[in-house]
Image (cartoon, rainbow, N blue to C red; front, side, top):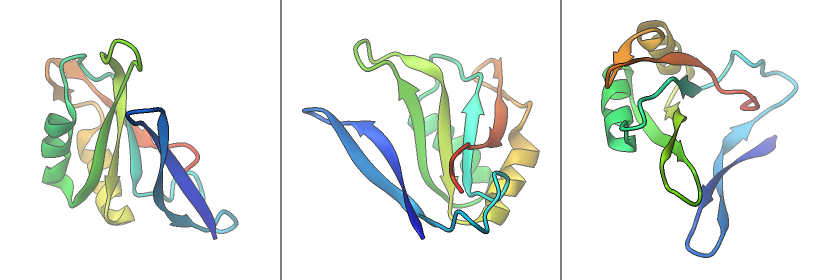
Length: 113
């Protein structure tokens, strides 16, 4: 099993956060509970992202990616569900929906399996 890491800026640098164990041999790019969300409004925060995706299942984590210096959103983020089935449902329901005035794109996150 391979340990996958997510990165988050901490007080003094970057922190490695474990995102879970996945077997790389038997998993495909479409077998994941991690979703990429693109086309986010620069005003969308992690709370709003988690709230809207929670309609589709149990959200473990929601992260809006921000510029390290300015702290402003880069317009994309990630949502992790407790199961692949919930992530599948969220992808089907949320892809192409409008969130904070912007049409979002939802895909399976690359490199998660």
